[in-house]
Amino acid sequence: MEAYYIPPTLVEQKERTATFRRKRNVQGSLWRQVLKMIALMPLFMITFFFFHHCSSAPRLPDHEICRLDNIKLQQRLDALQDELLLGDLQLKDLLGNNYHRVKSKVFSFNVTRSKLPDVHLPPPSGNLIVYDRDCSTVFESRKTTSGYFRIRPRPEKEPFLVYCDMSDGGGWTVLQRRSNGKVNFNRKWTDYKEGFGLFKGKNDEYWLGNDHIHDLLAGEMTLQIDLMDWQGERRHAIYENLRIQNEDDNYRLLVSLYSGNAGDALSGGSNVEEQWSASLNGMQFCTPDKDNDRYVTGNCAQENKCGWWFNRCHAANLNGVYYKNGNYSGAYDNGVIWSTWRGLWYSLKYAAMKIRPTSFLQTGSGNGING
Image (cartoon, rainbow, N blue to C red; front, top):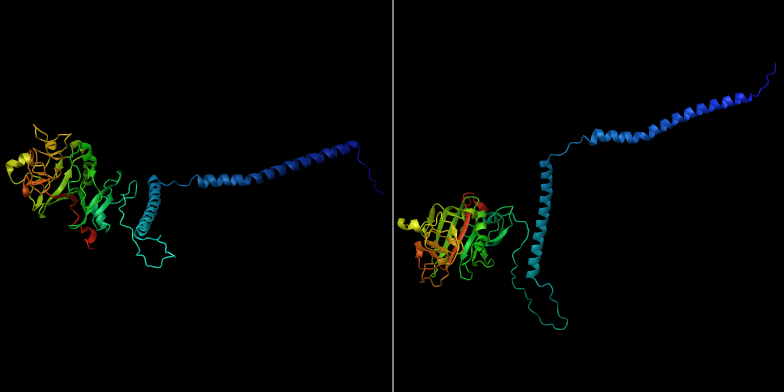
């Protein structure tokens, strides 16, 4: 029996069409969800990685971060110091040689090559790198020639210029010097506090400044006083454990054991009766505008026209009036005096105060001046 195709009715066609659309919508919805999940996979993986790795990464301690920063800064400072040294060498080379001399094309005779005279450059200023706390550390860095150097006793303060005496074993920081009378020492408290004088030649006169001196005496220091009269004879006095208090105590002077061949003038000499009124040990610093002495009816600083440690008044005064030729006369014994050697009425030609750590020789610092 033959089979005949019977076309569906209109109702059946509509039902088939609706069923097909429902299936297609379901399939489309499933595919959309699958595609959305695939699209979200990278974001999910990134979020998972961040929370499980980045957020849990340990943070370095503050002191470790500070240490690393210090290492970087030190490396930078070392590089800048190398550049500074290179620039200094280039400058010295330019000053010592005349590279700009042009040979004449007309004249054939020989011209003696000229050399520029020595040029004294001003001391550097600003925040240049300075590591040496005093002249003993300058000496230990193998700079064994006397001269002016910048030192920095306290890292929180600015460096300053000082003369380093590399004789007598080296490493001496010069606090004061008298040699020619060119500098006026009749000054007020502020000048002696901050320092004054000339800082160019090896014999220039100056007072380093009471604040600077106080900063230099943080450790145990030895004081050596070099003296010379107008006949060229030299003497010295050495005091152990020099200390100077701060400005609140008016820079009070404290010294201990004496040795040398100039006599113990800071302690008032050998006369016990005079020591009571002349000893400077334990005395406060005085200036004409700030009287801290024990002289009730007068002002020692005004009479002596200088700043110094005074009792009633002194047996030693290295900041007094610079009288030439030694012997002098006047209303007051106010010359450059060390009475235990030349007396009160003889003004010395040369005087210098210099300090060095007491332990310097014990440790063999600098390996000797020729080391």
